[in-house]
Image 1 (cartoon, rainbow, N blue to C red):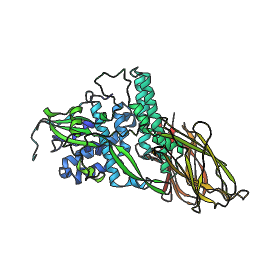
Image 2 (image 1 turned 60 degrees about the horizontal axis):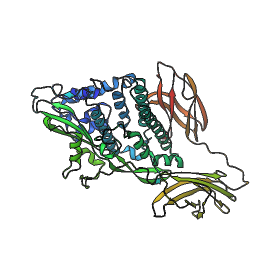
Image 3 (image 1 turned 90 degrees about the horizontal axis):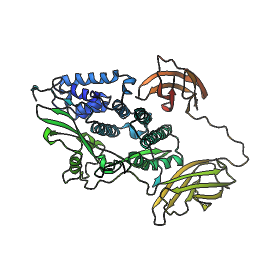
Image 4 (image 1 turned 90 degrees about the vertical axis):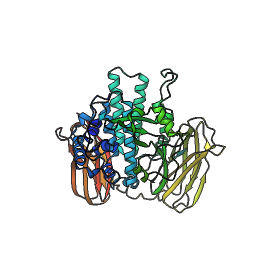
Length: 546
């Protein structure tokens, strides 16, 4: 667990008096030191902290200190590993990311989330971690719908590794029950699934209905992971899976000169609306995130979690930092007397998949379709419906009849259809009108039965390395639809480019590039292979094992 010395307290200690003219630091100092250029900008342009050249020098020294820490140091214990997992939220996203992730509002939202998570970390380790302190003195001057995952594979990979590291470490010390170990394995599996979906989204490919079903159940999975058996809890202890437990507060720094302390708080969940790409369509999606608060109090008025929750739900709740206004609706009231849980629980969640025969379908034939559809809580449902919109914009209703429990079957004829992209739209609702399924996909319909197949077009894609995990050498496979300058590089999970494996002009076609790994250059670990061509990029995960 957290040791007496922790890097974030060291950072806070180094950016206040007597090292600088400041008496009280900010949580942004830690994020700036961890690599956030956006935190630097806010500290300079909103809080005007850069007027103190000593502070600027010390903050730069802290950034260099963080960069100097080795990968083995970040893996030293759970506290360091938690901080390490926040770093993927702190680097700027370039043109290879979805457009909504490349604007300042998203950067500030990610920064707020990293500060929120850091506040939780400080709260949970308050008895183990040494708090920073200003030196005494007088300074001069004073339902299942199509879902979307935030496509940050670096983040999901690190969280999966953190879950694995936590479970194995505590199990080795005989400090974890079998059921809690299984919960950590569920968290690891959940993060790996989110990693896979992130890579699919970044490559512009479509999610399967099974993956959309998985996204819809994430809230339920998180509830299971966060819950604690009732026989373990004392009667007065709240269930950690309860939404009321999300709001916590901790003091992280003390200034004896003014007898004040710096409080870092986590609020109740907020809605977040994001415009995301799904195929060639832009959709408004809804998610949730936990807001971050920072304020100064007299040391004898330090808040408990219960006092903080009453403050949040009172008639005059606190305001989040001013710089968060870029991504929040400042016209809405901050008053929240009854916080809404955002678990998106099991009510109405369903699983869904379908099988076409033949797949892909052709024109001028009869196509059979089988649908597997069920709800997780036994809701009564009507038969799911299927609407097909052909490439010539004709709309066709397909009848789906029950075929045993949770199975439905239908067929349709493609006589007279024009070949091309065809929309399949599945819908289902309860008799009372609750929508359970609203899922669309695009199916490529061929040119007609008996016609000569056209040559399979070459896609821009990276198939990854084989074998994977890789011990010392292997082959990286990828394809290019046309000639152009190509760059294949290897990135670590901190978002740093470690080496360039190929850079130069290549013709259209499929390639298998030999890769020989030297231990002194690339240590054991998980990496991302990134292929760039004509302003586009594709990524694949590579694991190096010794």
